[in-house]
Length: 131
Image (cartoon, rainbow, N blue to C red; front, side, top):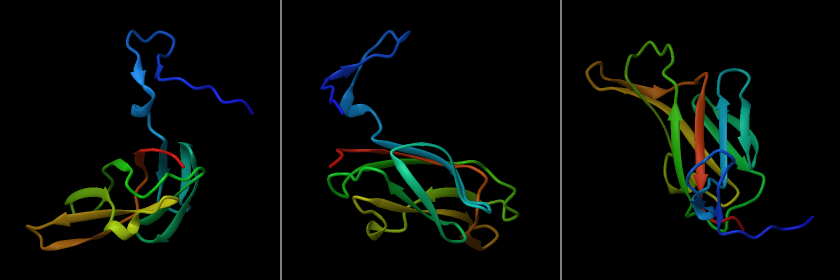
């Protein structure tokens, strides 16, 4: 396999180029309802259902360390708690160079409820240096 070394990329039809360092090293669109599955991805080998609302994303190629950045989204579901829904990491132990565990959480302070739930659509993009 050959390696192409570039510092900027520009897709056909784009007017602006961008630095290679600004391109996501991995991204995934997945669902956590049964069965948990990848809808589409780049550099993600699997998603593992740990428990309700807890999913581990495993990378095909590891990051150089655990200090990469992650941005997430979650589609509003028919969560009967009508709270704020987020997709995030529990704490720093949820990140490793080879994987990251993400949690689907809901919070509704006015109703005094919070917890975890499964979603029809979740997404995450990971930015950082690959090993």
